[in-house]
Amino acid sequence: MRLTLQSSPLAQVAADWLIVGLWEKETPRSSVAEFDAKLGGLLTKLREQGDVTGKAKELTPVYQCEGIVARRLLLVGLGSRDKADFTGLLSATAAAAKMLSAKPCQRVALSLPDALNAETALRACAHGFYQGCSTAGIRKNANERTPPEEVAFIVPAIDPSLQDSVRRAESEGRSANLARELVNTPPCDLYPESFAERAREIASKTGLELQILDEPQLLAERMNALLAVARGSDRPPRLVVLRHRRGGAGPTLALVGKGVTFDSGGLSLKTTEQMVDMKCDMAGAAAVLGAMQTIAELQLPVNVLGVMALVENMPSGKAMKLGDVLNARNGKTIEVLNTDAEGRLILADALSYAVDLKADHLVDLATLTGACLVALGLDVAGLMSNDDAWCQKVLTASQAVGERAWPLPMFPQYREMIKSDVADIRNTGGSRYAGAISAAKFLEEFVGTTPWAHLDIAGPAWAEHENATREAGGTGCFVRTLVELARTYGQ
Image (tube, rainbow, N blue to C red):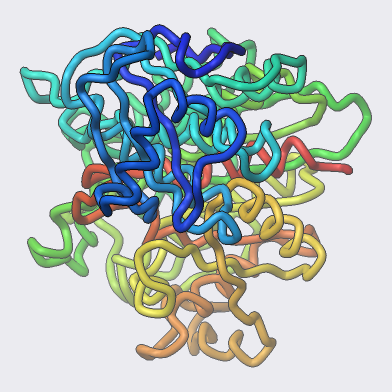
């Protein structure tokens, strides 16, 4: 899918579909009013008849239009203008893209809504197209969705800032789709080695520095917690390290992702219902890989380190047992009381490694706890940190790109939940309360004094059901947030 810009009257735009957004309880103005006149007042008549209301995500196709060049017209409700934001524009466009991509077409044109600033509105609508055209059915013989060959954004004037926004949106869109594809890939095809090879391909294309640590190297690096989780599987673990060095002597941002390519729970075996979507337990690593791809493609002037810890968590005679005590990379001992609390174990060593690589700031992403879903639902990530200023920086980045995170407290007393009688800490919180926070307090033990933020994306990483704006499956969440964080890092 190619994104382009065009500056011309709407009535003169050639396209298989022309998408025009309408605000709720508002008569057409400016270019849309001129377009309505070319249509003989059709938009006004549809509104007066109640056929078009402008409510958010309302879709009204018009198949025969006199007075315009486009073959078909799709009217999209944008909701209330005074509530316009990145998420609303993305959702409205995604609904349109989902409808249109059900059948092949070559060129779609979209009249850029006159809300927010033009650069932000363009990126929101572009991401809506990438989301709406994506599918979880990557192993089906017949294509369920066919993205248009070209999406043209109709704007009053074309300037360099809009060209930059198109370039950024294309890269971020492809990277979000990469993360979706990885999450949707069956675990028989995606495992630590194959994930690492995909990272190798991306590094080769984008110029990222790459290091892949295998079992002997992981052992030499004292990553005993990560190795313990991987022990039950026939698939060997990997740690992927990507580097983007364009920030000179400036600070380094580290992005760390949990990559459990399949999570059976280990000896603390999940039920079938709990296990059926556990191919998604590598969504954190997928987001890091997608973000690193865009950071490199855009040649952002910043130093970024991407670390992806990749394992399978399986039961076998070699598997980690309850009661085991692990010696983590930073020397802390961990009592294992639940082998299904494995994500924090692999992140412990990965975070410690990033600290030793001289990262100045850390962000980790993980589908870590069901407790975070209970607390915040399916669409909001939990955000926890050891540094208020850094937490706010991450939150601001997420808000700027329409992804939702909510800070949870990290009071010192929560540390009591992970105390162990036989080791320094244990890998569970010991009760059904504050599970997302106790997991974060566990991770905090491995970052030292480095400013760090933890995003628990267990809810937004996976869509259980299809809706008007997306299909079920991987969502590619927080790729945009990581790119925005890197873009503004050091500012």
